Image 1 (tube, rainbow, N blue to C red):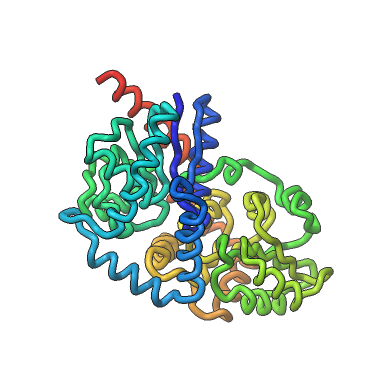
Image 2: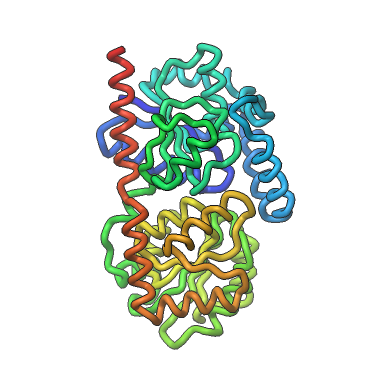
Length: 375
């Protein structure tokens, strides 16, 4: 079978989930095409949408929080939002892509794409099965105005929340968030560190801020480097934030306990080689770390859905969290130097976070398409 996977570059998490789905479908012998839907409107539109999101989150987080809260108040299954009509503008281009590609089904890891697919479906211009993936541990605003055949959600405990917002319970599949199989493949930590160019015998504190390098990463790095014992190292994944990488390298010259890394596809290896990870509570990164069974300290969150992600993880013992930097550092030190605390967190991660979400999603999608063809 041949599938189209739609994403949108508002943060890297949606794309990472889309790549995980593509990887699994191809592993099962299917053809899978990945498309950033906003690129259908042209690169300038894609840059404006992605750049607008990143710029608002980085430089005006209070504005982003206000917009998210306004969306929550506006969101309703009984009416269509401006978000719906904005995404309908891309419908014609998406319809032509679907016609040219002769696909058997569609998967989307982004709300915007689900809105466009819904517009096509309601106007009788989409006849393919479509499956949507929620990449946060909450039902974000406007999911309830979409009309997809199935919704993959992160955890069974979220079923009531999604159903309560108007999504039919029969369409909800609580498989988890799909992540690449690389995060569940066993790897010796020393080998992982060597693959990442780190001393194999070092103890690593991994610091991440998403693809945009969000949060007080420089300050956290300074405090962690001061707390490091001999043989310990701080590795900072700066994503696409080149200014952050340059700032850290100015403060911490090569050869010291701090290493700054730009955008990398080796995140699974860095996680496998670390003793603890400090990260904002993004749905994808948090899930990847939990699948890897790495102790997590959650740091600054993007107001809105990440606030709910943090509450879910901390509430289930999947991570530790603190608002102030000294307490964040202390949480990581506790998880690194107290094996009982770290092991309790790993057990909670194994209980609540499945590494098989992508495989289960692929199987459900194929079954859905087969049933549609038989009708």
